[in-house]
Amino acid sequence: MYRCSGEPGDDGPAGRAAYRPGELMMQRFDAPNMLDAPDAARAVAKYRGHADGYDASARRTMRLRRRAIAKLALRPGDRVLDVASGTGLSFPLLRDAVGSDGEVIGIDISPEMTSQARERVSAAGWRNVTVLESPIDTAPIPAPLDAVLFHFTHDVVRSQRALQRIFSATAPNARIAIAGMKYAPWWMSPVNVIVRAKARPYMTTFEGLDKPWDRMLPHLSEYAWTTALFGTCYLGWGRVRDSASVGRR
Ligand SMILES: C[S@@+](CC[C@H](N)C(=O)[O-])C[C@H]1O[C@@H](n2cnc3c(N)ncnc32)[C@H](O)[C@@H]1O
Image 1 (cartoon, rainbow, N blue to C red):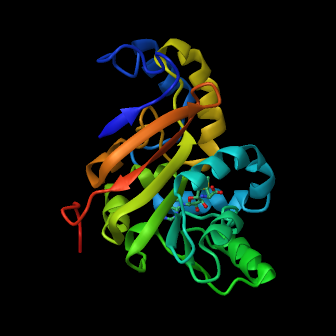
Image 2 (image 1 turned 90 degrees about the horizontal axis):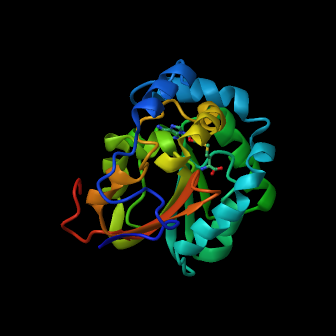
């Protein structure tokens, strides 16, 4: 069951294309150096420059982060994966929810971001929060996962290989939550110049920015989503298909 609970008329009447011709022209004009697909080496290079100021710049995401983590309905003892965990800003909330008997695993490709995440873990003294520095699509992901958080991870959610890897480690009916930036609805398309300007430092591709979650849908039995920040961000949540799930190891 896939359900959308976006703002009224958010993506227009059923069947409307997400892009208008003018939108495509604008995108060519204001998206130099963006690729058709995510690129891991470029992501590492981008985040080399962002790591120091990242926590300050991510302050505005904290409300959405809390909402996303609440959608995971974590229980004490759960094992949760924080995909592309960055500096570990979600760790305190995840660790609180799973308690000392649970497990939080953060995986991120950037040495600079993971180094900050490790400092956060050691400062807090958490023994059950693990940080792995790795591209997610080749990471040794502990299984089975009870829940998976995708918070502002556009490059990862547009990669089929990354999704295969993650969903091959999930328990049947595992919960997922996903949040990030998206294009505003077509009737607000001039706003997308701002969306691209805000998003450009944090992703290597704008591909799929109209429906960032759609590659995940074949792995899910349930999915619902809503918008935030005037349609320029989204929050989705759902459940992983059971043993028939695609890409299972
Ligand atoms: C916008 S940050 C989000 C960090 C964190 N999820 C948060 O909400 O604060 C995106 C993160 O994705 C990571 N990333 C990009 N591509 C990746 C990949 N293929 N595998 C693992 N991490 C990746 C970057 O290094 C960066 O830390």
